[in-house]
Image (cartoon, rainbow, N blue to C red; front, top):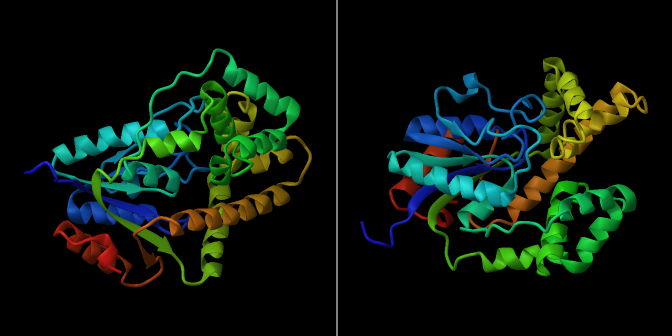
Length: 320
């Protein structure tokens, strides 16, 4: 094997509620793969319902990595994910198995496949605490406006309500004097270290996606989502990422006695639909994604055909 050889990697992405988990498992079973979760919330132990975490039954015996690895108090960045995924890919490939990334966090998938490598930079003493206090006193709008001023590229890729990522980007800028987007650009190699096929799932009828999202929220409520959200609310000062996550924060007004439960459920459905639109926008801007209709009767057959052709040496861009 010459030095130009690149390990093959499959990725299954797209918006929430499109069946990524099931397709990833089916491909792993068919092609001897192992799944690397590319979901920014399923890493946390004890947060199962609100994150739509894959269950042991859904895994069907396929090894899954990157799930239930951290307590909810821990922070986890795209840099952390990239470092973990690089290690996991090496281990999986060394076993002769096929690495399959599955998840809706497009930033994770793209950063890994493009080979972004992040340098470890310790924040200045007390800077994170200072920014957290500024978030409380100045408000999230002011901090997002500051980020837009000093690093517009990073701000454009971060939702204003994602306070954790806004603070992280500002922390990097204040600690180094360099925009986080500039650091990311300089860490991108000339070409990807992997040969990849990215399968994107979506529905031809957007209303079908929204109906599935609404039904998923209803099922989550039946499974005990409110109790899980209560745990996050009680620990919102220490569960910093979860407290900002869709699926939990929408219930905070209910716990505070400021809104009805019905209103909070409706807010969660709307927030989930909005998130799905942002996910679609992200994946649509990724190069080389092969889009498949999530409700097509031949979905699995087509995904398997594309994967087989890819593994035999075809290029993803030639397959659609």
